Image 1 (tube, rainbow, N blue to C red):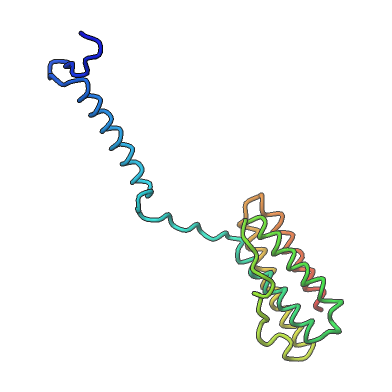
Image 2 (tube, rainbow, N blue to C red):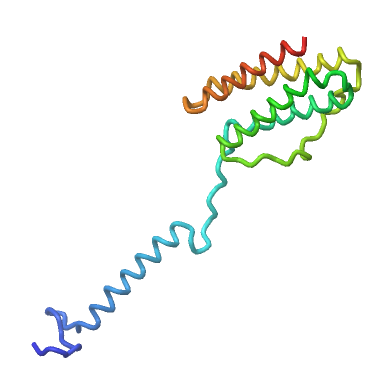
Length: 170
């Protein structure tokens, strides 16, 4: 065997060392390309979008309730001292839920007032708020029951806060 001869034959098949190295390199390249195309890197199907977080409806609900309170305050300014803390609590709940779920809150202008809120008298409007608050409390209690332990305390405190909001609306 001479050193520096790149055309030496290997084994009984008579293949040169250069041919063997090329075959191994080609096999490695094909293997790597096969795995890359299998992961979708080269135009395969896109990854499916992640499932929405189960707490996302609570964020939307909290923002909707805050919007309802703000609309009611605009229609009945005499209720501002009574209702503004509740609206602020709903905004705080939405912010904390967004933080926990890693979602962005929509802008404050994105919350549209609910039709009919403030259209009747004070007692009718407070009744509508009570009904919405009750539905929100039930949704939060249901979410709490299905939430993992790391989120259950937060969702449970939101359900409890909504129960106290019902008392403010009496």
